Length: 180
Image (tube, rainbow, N blue to C red; front, side, top):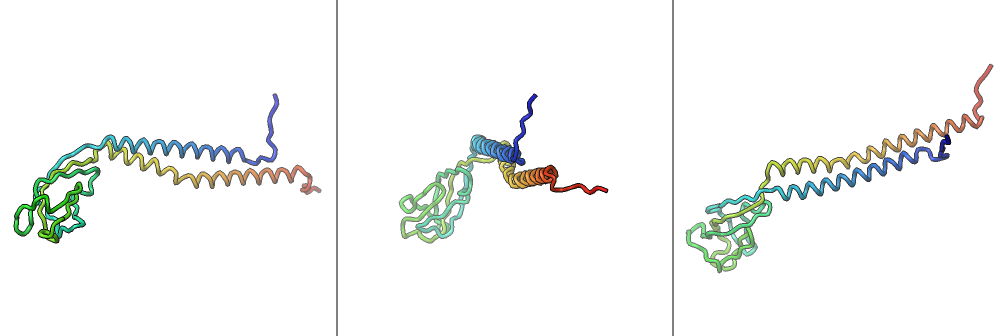
């Protein structure tokens, strides 16, 4: 039986092993985070609703967003646009609609309050998406521990170096033991 001894390595294999382990863990975390994002996107539930007489204040050429504009993948369809003060219907030549945003194009109703009625669809969270999002964010938090692993490994390597240095000094005969 022949044993192999690496001279002068001083824990380098431990350090390389930890770096490789951290790389593999990082790769797995990235894969699971990407998979979680795709699973969450696939498990949203399409939901429809409608709003009657939502008041948009001082509609100008830059436009006003409907209150549902912050939903995920929302699509709005206008059913009625009225002047909020007079109640008369505003025809489509006086405004432009960009999804859930309404902008004035004419001068007759510019800077006035409008009442809009519309229907909309959006992607709603489900229990599955909540669980997937929580799991993905928890898994992605693993990388914050990498610095701790590197510091602990460096400490182990330093301790191994110290042991090797002490052993080398004792074996060289430079330190003579006290005797009577």
